[in-house]
Length: 135
Image 1: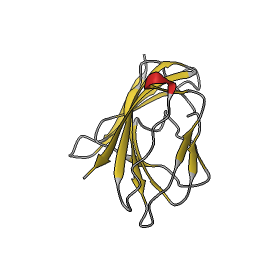
Image 2 (image 1 turned 90 degrees about the vertical axis):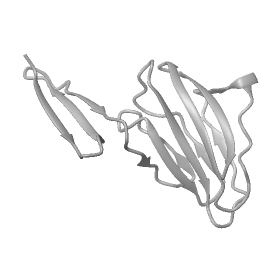
Image 3 (image 1 turned 90 degrees about the horizontal axis):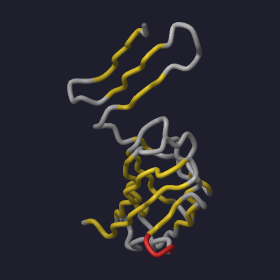
Image 4 (image 1 turned 120 degrees about the vertical axis):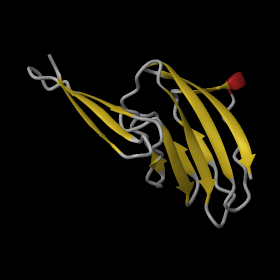
């Protein structure tokens, strides 16, 4: 039988960790309500075991790399924010599959917000839908 450790806050955000008594294969599940901030850099690499909802503010032209720790069936969102300068671009790793095979063009105004919703189809394929220019 596994031990269960629950951490969280009154808002429902947190994690559930199932501790395996005989192996090092503990399972941690992040509960809804947490938006993790991705580190901005030339290459941005989400860790899908850390969360399913992310935000990043682009400080330059960037690449969203293939995430680590993909779990088929996982769903989530990435909020993409232009910095105060705007006009930043974002290239996408090979796992990201957009409608008609075309990566999206981001909104370019300073501080504009776009969103990519995704479903992990396989360990090497993410179906993604882009929605731009939230106010």
